[in-house]
Image 1 (cartoon, helix red, strand yellow):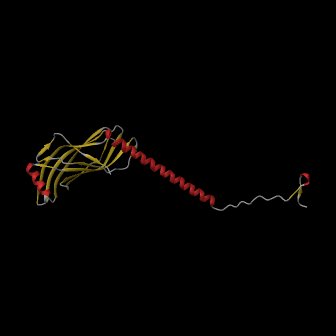
Image 2: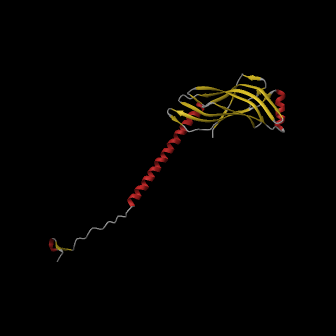
Length: 221
């Protein structure tokens, strides 16, 4: 007999072979690929969240109430403002004071476009030279609008113009369209597109307004 005899005369059958293990080809590499993809996606998400957090921090540091950039207009001179045959002839100059009160944040003004409006219609455009503004710095920009532009004034708008013409005092709105970046240490943010609106300059014809100033509002999108 092939069976073996054990203690106390007991017989045992043949040894049971170990169970066979089957390996499915390609399963391990597939799992590894999925894990690597998930890990990569997690890293991308963490990086994006970190950048968003940094952006929110920089914006908060700049535009919290005590460190908000301040803008106002001074030295307004309106030398010509004549509307004839739906054509507006104008000559307007003024200074824009931009104050960066932050101690650690600089501002790159990559694009500055100045525009002038009367009764909601644009009549003037002026592109200014880009510049960098350092910490706790005030920059003065000189804006000049000089030329002619088709402007249609009818109904109430024409009545308003004739009334202001009689007084020699015109309500003109100006706007600065910007593309800016902020610098905190060695970190530079992406570009933002704020607008600075200066409403109702109340410009006297043939006079230079040097007393006082007109404050402007900054709007971000």
